[in-house]
Amino acid sequence: MLKKINVPDLGEADGAKVEEISVSPGDLVKQGDPLVIFETSKVAVELESPGNGKISEVFVSVGDAVEEDQLVMSIELIGDQGEASDSAKKEKLNELEGDISTDVLVLGSGPGGYSAAFRAADLGKDVVMVERNSTLGGVCLNVGCIPSKALLHAAKVISETKEMSKLGLKFSSLDIDTKTLRGWKNKVVGQLTGGLTNLAKKRNVQIVNGVGTFASANKMKVTFPDGRFVHIEFKKAIIAAGSEPVQIPVFPNDDPRVLTSTEALEVDIIPERLLVIGGGIIGLEMATVYHELGSKVTIVEFADSLIPGADQDLVKPLHNRIAKLYENIFLSSKVTSIESTITGMYVKFEGPDGLKKDLFDQVLISVGRKPNGSLIDSEKAGIKVNKQGFILTNSQMKTNVENIFAIGDIVGQPMLAHKAAHEGRVAAEVIAGMNSYFDGTLIPSVAYTDPEIAWVGITEQQAKRLNIKYEVGIFPWAASGRSLSIERKEGLTKTLYDPVTKKIIGAGIVGSNAGDLISEAALAIKTGCTASEIGELIHPHPTLSETVAQSAEVFEKTIVDMYLQ
Image 1 (cartoon, rainbow, N blue to C red):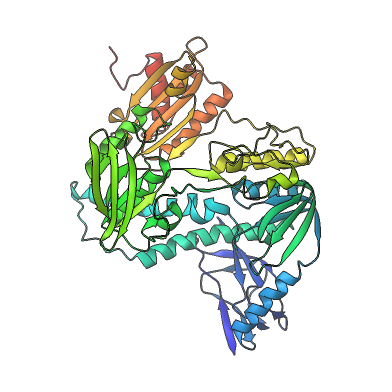
Image 2 (image 1 turned 180 degrees about the vertical axis):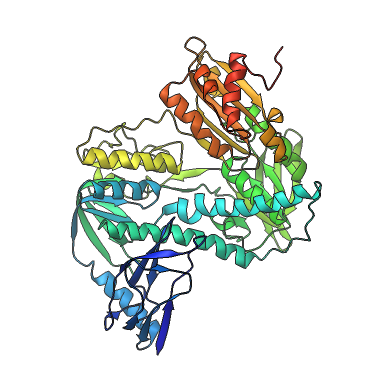
């Protein structure tokens, strides 16, 4: 059967360029074999064979500009595709039978793992990357950072349409197609994970899909889904095995109505009433999504505030806003039991007001993540793992075993993709002989809620706890022309300074796009800018970014956009 193959979905790109063609007319291919790589302005898109067969014609050349759905080639499909596909998969696994040896083995392909693998390859090392899932990218790209931000974008669009109704722009009732929404979210994920596969191929990084566990300090056992395994000998190893959601054993975790963030990202159904256990960043982000999709949300948080690690003057605008939107927010409270019933999840929780009972359609458990340090047979390599499951490292990401490094969630807080990526680069560079070190004193944190919250450097909480002297400048967004023009005046920008040197030592922002604004403050801290230097930098007007300079002017008492008594 002759089948035409067209340019695949290019996402937001208007077109692409043919970067590489892997086949010629007459070539035999298996299902999933790479055929063509397209380069857009943002990502690389790989076109794979839809089945087993022979390439008939190729209608494009390297360097050609192409558009979505344009005819690329044709293939004569051969035999039963289901059976042939299974055979091809088995043959692919058979290629890995027998020991493999490499300079650097990377366990895990999340932002830390792929950054380490790609950097090591760029520095001339032979690299094998072991990934337990069928796609690269780890939790972040597949079931974390990226899909959640896609859904949060959808939630933001819904929210803004509601907000504009009182300003004269009214829209008809919302019609939510969860299948299409989920498909778009998955497409975003696929573009990025596919791009990683292409980057690995270009760097000759070998990918082995299976569960990796240590056999010794120089050997890893990788077990395939069918039970077979292969050993990989390595000179150096980088552990980037990540973390997983914490589950509470006494809760009915087998009930499909009890969710972790992974299941919640599938948006299979929109529950009428959703209980979120945990008022941290992940729980609040998912609450944002489900509220805008139509769920009535209740949050239960054990601490006395939402996002306990953030300064409370940053959290307050968020709390005030969602308190008006959600059914309930219970602080200093805990869930004592969850019972599965036909009518829903019967939940008991207690707090300052005593014992409460309620019925919910779904329960999202978001009480943190735990490292996977105890799941990789670390002891067989002699690697020290603490009681919490974290692997201890030094500033060069070395473990207690000289040739084994560890990065990312598995080495400690904060569990953030951007931290892991930098740690991965450091580990790779040290392996290559460079004198690199990881500095974890300046890692931005962002809650992609509505409004967003972001902070970097010393917080007021930390300064008070550690007896660090500081002074502060706070600019309220109610005085910002840009924030007023987008009808979101609840935000604020604050910057903390050393009282002697007047250099910035920390910053916090709450408001629209706070996560995009915080990097200026991080750079100012990194370079040792003083308040006057920040205030003297000419910012474009009207923008939200100028609130960073205005907070410095408040500190310097040179602000003209406010009257200070």
